[in-house]
Length: 260
Image (cartoon, rainbow, N blue to C red; front, top):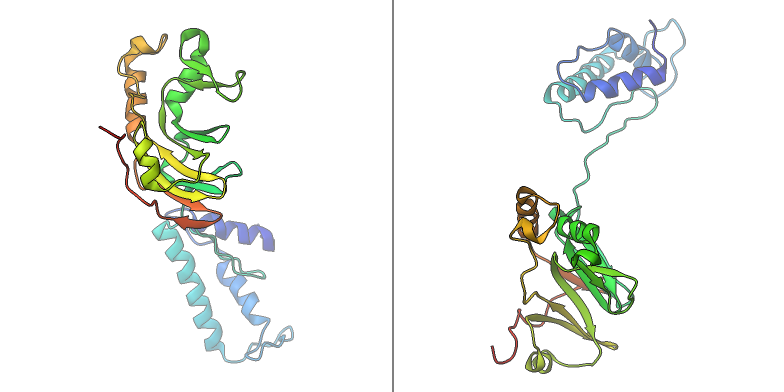
C-alpha cells in the first residue's frame, strides 16, 4: 500500500498519540523524498541527482525519527509532525477561570476553574445568585408544589430553588462607603466597591443551604442527598472580581451584621 501525503501525515499523527506503535515502513523513503527535493540553498534538485552534503539529510532524518519516537514512547499526546508542507504542534491549553458577567453592572465574578460544571449563575434584577448545580437541579425538578422552589422577586413566573445558594452579589442602590454599609448590614456581607449606580455587595448565607436528610428531597435517596452536600462543600477557592475588565480588591473583609 502506498500512502498519499494526507494519509501519511494522519498516520504520523496517530502514532504521536499512541504507545508502542512501530514506525511506518515508508518513513525513511518519505523523508528521503522530502530532503532530496532541496539542495543546501533551498533549490530543487533534478530527478536522478543526489542532493549535496548528504550529512544534512542524514542528521535531519535522525532528528525527525527521534521526534516521532519520543512522542510515541512518552505518550505525550501533544500533537503530531506533518512532513508534507508544514509542521503542526497541538498542545493542551490550560483551563482558565470561570467568569460570570453580572448584567450591565460592569462587574465580573471570577470563579476558580475547579467550579466548571458545578455551579449555576442566575440573575434576578440587580442580583446575581451562584448555586451549587446538583442541589439547584433537584430543587427545580421538584418545583414550587413540593416547596422546593419559589417565585423570583422581579418575575413571578421565574422560579428560584430554596437551597443550594453559595453566595450572591447585588447592586445596593445608594453610593455608600464600606463603613456606612456595614453599620446598617443585617447579614454577613463583603463590600466590593462603589460605582455611579451604587455599591456592589457580596452577600453570604445566614441559613443552611444544603440538605442533611433525604426527607427534605422527596424521591431522592440518602446517598444522593449526601452527594449533593459534598458537592456543595467542594465549591471552595479564591473568588475574585473585576469591574469593567479591571480586577478589584474588596475594600474590607467579610463583616458580620451590626450588633452581632
